[in-house]
Length: 127
Image (cartoon, rainbow, N blue to C red):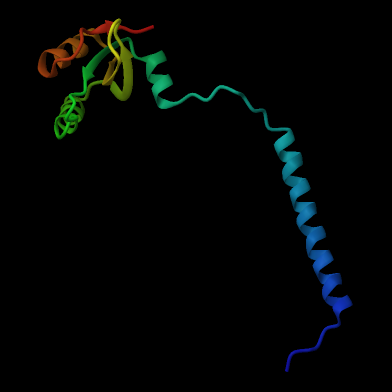
């Protein structure tokens, strides 16, 4: 049979548990205080914009890419190119925003071969 506890004993144990949790939380706060934080978050897309020298924008049709996007990604993977791709949105004067998949390449030749095979805007040099 379980031992009967008084209300005071239960409150005492609860207070002790709360104190232990506060001590642990204080330890976490101390660790967080010494960890440097930056406001800049570098996403894969940001990294690609900064790293890859050439880009080709392939416009999405109103019906979407369908299996064509998978075929483009597979084509790049099979050739072992140094590449990346991310969704992007461009705006042309007089038009609304247009969704594109932007393919990034290190080499101009890779960008031109991709463009010749899959179309897209001209291969432009990045930043």
